[in-house]
Length: 213
Image (cartoon, rainbow, N blue to C red; front, side, top):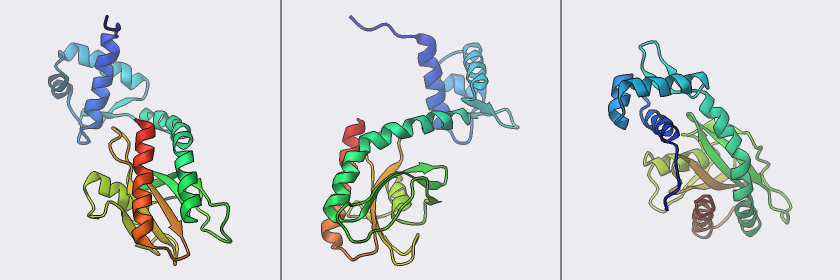
């Protein structure tokens, strides 16, 4: 027997998904056509979402996802840290480099989890909450790689000195998790074998994706 569901909640979630996929915004009429529901119903759904900060109208009356969605996204970060933590720990200990999980936050890369190796004499200190442009550094470029906006045939991005002088970064996108733009990476001041480390970073990103599935 199929589980009972809420039609209103289902429609509200479809509104959010549709608005999230339409950065240019939609009119009520266009939104109604997109989700196959009449204008009156969509108007009520949007009004309710606006009251909770999950939808907003611009100066031209077009509908967009509201900033309240950011609060929901921040609430997800502890879950992501918990699930990714063992993978980052294993990666950091194996390669002797600081490992991190980074999310796209607007046009910036935001580090939400960092694990430092326990056995090295020195390593890069990388702060949770650190931000930089997506176009700068391996972590951000790996997110762009996941979007198809960057080229890296091996499946990972390597950079040198783009965030911190002398620091080498390697990162790979977390693949196949709907709604999540993230990368797993390492950063080091010491030399390492990219042919060995690159595939390990790609495998760690795939492991994170598997844990989130």
